[in-house]
Amino acid sequence: MNSVIEMSSNLKVVIFSVCVVLLYTAYVELHVPRIEPSPPPVINMPGSNTTEDLREDLMTLGKRIYHGRGACALCHDGSGGRAPSLKDIFNVAALRINDSAYRGSAKDARAYIRESMLRPSVYVVEGFALKGEPSPMKSVTLPPAELTEREVRAVVDYIEGVSLRGSAR
Ligand code: HEC
Image 1 (spheres, protein in one colour):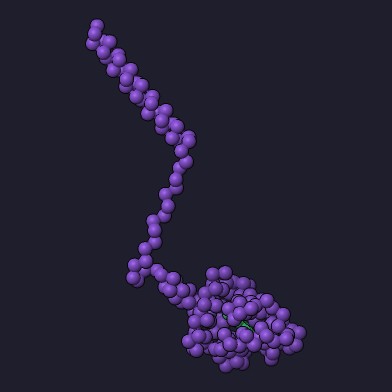
Image 2: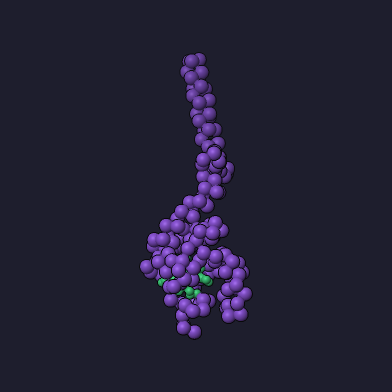
């Protein structure tokens, strides 16, 4: 008889404990906000992707587009025949922006190059189209180039890089 009482009170303890655990779990589940695990921190080891490396990657992409899908080099071949040479575009851009005929919104060379790529007819370099005519250059967002925002930035990076090194065409 005694052992039966003992067993049933043991059982009660077990049942009680299980209930407590279940209730607590339910409480935590309902009331304690879940914390999303954060991504592991980026550690820059020598040779891993630093900002410099990423910039270099962008320039490589820019170079590929400039000589490939963008066909920039086809017209901007350095001769100045079909299109102005971009060799000195970082200095030339200031002249364009300060030209009284300039109607664009660029305030610096990067913005001017970007604008020239996206909306070539905003400012047409003298001698490359009849007066009042649109630029012979198509916006790079149109086919066949259809550059994305990232690709446009990559090309500007590339032009800036080679122009500052003095080797752009
Ligand atoms: C079909 C020929 C052609 C192609 C392809 C072309 N351009 Fe041009 N681009 C021109 C001509 C012509 C001009 C001068 C007329 C003008 O100002 O829009 C010009 C002007 C520019 C200018 C302004 C130059 C200045 O001296 O003010 C920039 C910058 C430029 N292009 C960049 C590019 C880039 C980058 C690409 C490739 C993504 C490209 N162009 C592709 C013909 C071309």
